[in-house]
Image 1 (cartoon, rainbow, N blue to C red):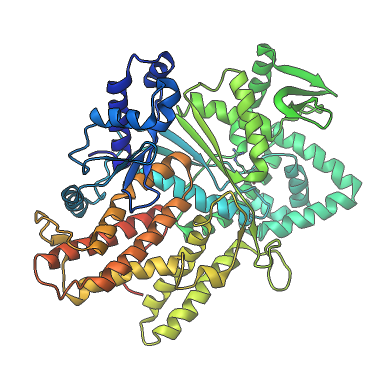
Image 2 (image 1 turned 90 degrees about the vertical axis):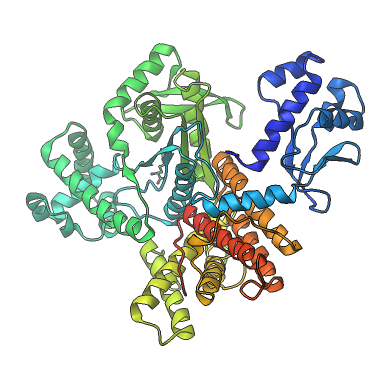
Length: 590
Ligand code: ARG
């Protein structure tokens, strides 16, 4: 089977409905031709089945029959005997399905043998752009950017695993009027850096930005010079360009430290990249007839976005002074990604505060005819990161937190923990564990939340050994590996041709959960909520623990022993893959 069981069942039910009802209703026929949804889901209550199909209830109106009779008709045309026990009808017309034990056992053998756990790469690979992280040059990279980095990376990993061709783009804010002020300040305060091309001399750019802003706000002459510097930069004047490059270089170096620490791959393609295309965007919008002048600015009046008076809101694409803005750049970027990068799907990962911006940009691109109908553009929005007190994240002394210090603290705390548990261990080992646990904890804490809610950053919670946390998950993996060490088992050479026998309830429960990996990955690939994968892994660890408490492994006789070792192995492989898709490295011991 090349897809998940859920997808396979959906296909089988669609086919059954088609056979049973094709030609009976015009509207239904249209659905069959387009996108009929057989409403198959994992069962809510596992007492009644593993999967259920609710199609009959949805078809009653169209077919003018009792749902129970419709369900019976569907079953008549349904072929699932290779996967499931005979289907049963419950309540008004739900169809319940239990997977066959021998099918589950056969699938376990497939998972045991495969390094992709039996999940084939997609047969419809797409070119996907994930636009994430995207901090701003010379400004502070804040926790919102950290969240974008962690969520975007995980989404990219999942799509890559599925076999898509993913372009990871860092849309850094490297252009705009703030550079006038920065360049002017740089010339004044670091003239040497400019002549020697020494970005390092600039030191911490956040401080530099603050100082520059101070000068800008206090000194009108400085302000005027800054305006001129913007013009210089835009016209490619060498000195201004050099200064801009130095600033970008220094920022890049600082960002890169964080990406290295977090093991993030990204291609930088900042706002400046689209500079030469901005004029075209405005011209083309003009030509299509979408542009209007409003108080000197050129804009597109939006549909469905209104002010208090109910009048349509404008999306400004060129200000009255001739300057382009964030929206113009995103329109140019969108066009470039469609026409030049040949993207089939584009994903933007930023905080929810930008939802309006993206909805507006997408609308204008659609109305301009730049966005093909089949093209999937999604804003993956997320909530705020808050401190434990529910307010903005700050240090104890009230300063804003730097991301570096945040990660360092997570690692330090993990270090204290390993030191207490295992003081005798080698330093290098303790360091490795502390880093994996600390960084894993930060990533997992973020990813395990439904991204649309705000989340409270708590070191204590994310580093706890119990609960839905990285340490808990990492321990589960270590425990399974420990079983192998204790029994001196070479998991990879476990006789894989051997069949796996699931004799007890906890084994069956664990195996069924393992089988759901494919559908969880599919779901995250579609709706881009990595917390589903976290929840899946958490439940997997729990089900594994129950199995391990109730079923002896190393001490049981054959054939149970090998069967159970295989279950251990598949569990470990699933945890490792799952955590890897979240950007978290596993440890063999901790
Ligand atoms: N630089 C922006 C910020 O810090 C995020 C950019 C997101 N990507 C985009 N194509 N607009 O808010």
